Image 1 (cartoon, rainbow, N blue to C red):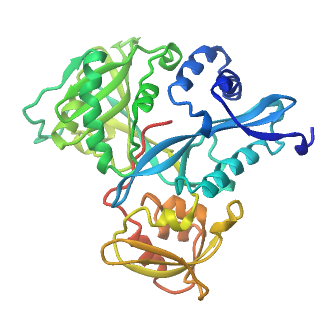
Image 2: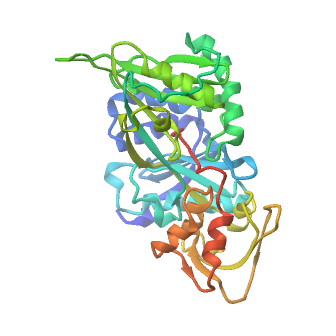
Image 3: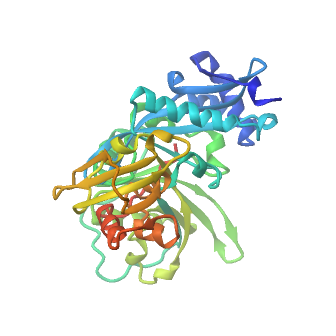
Length: 407
């Protein structure tokens, strides 16, 4: 079928079943259809969902969620959360995904919607050609249960309590809101996002228990357990779904609680790249670490996006930016940051100090990927000596960003 045989349209609420059917087949999870429909219903925004149509049926789908993300110096800021992107198996390699991405990004630009978009990539190689850059990584820790803490770890006086789900939910939401207000990379959550994140359907359990909840006045954890036995005895596993702590004492207390659960051999926790977990342990190598790519970001409108965050230091440079997919971003921009960390971005015709791409600026946007690292990889070219170092410093946040919520 030729590309000209496709058309693009906005979806309606009535399209949800067919929308979900494309998703379950694309992600090889056909048996979970009813559960996926139920999950998608909690966050489905039909006015922001797009379908590519062939012969009267959906050949590809994608949607944008109205979300926010914590950015350096500004707290929660609107972001278009791109999700549920899938192409029917018999329509792949025919430009369907490109049409979806163009409809989303060009539509956001033309409507003046959020200046940035973000997504989690099922395959890391896909989205770079659409201008997305890797903005966060995360670490999966596998910790030997019962591992002792180093001497002097402060657990505070408040205890961790195991509570039922209905009791936990009203307690954990304000704790999360406090955390997300200042943790760069954390997503804001509305009611639908909470419902989606905490759906406890059988397909999400993957052979583990339903969600369990433990709360502390300044933190909480939601986790699953899987029983297991080896020749040496009990060898169960704790797998954390959501873990938030707003004080060091809460952090240490909740980790201790998880490590001390009986009949468990391993505890699995995802965290940011600067997670302090191993520093609590008497034997740091008891926590094995595996690093993965996390949140990908896209600067939809470069000038509005770069002005949406604060910066660590003053800088005044001319950027020569490449952007084939969203050409309104391409060209030369003067990027100026004052001593208060506020940016101004305007068109410029002067000689560039740095050449880069919108994808690389998106990777650096939250402060997780340093401009200097991009330059070392040959992805940023310096024309004026010292400019890369100045930009790299300006883009830093207090801590590396962490986004642990897959949406």
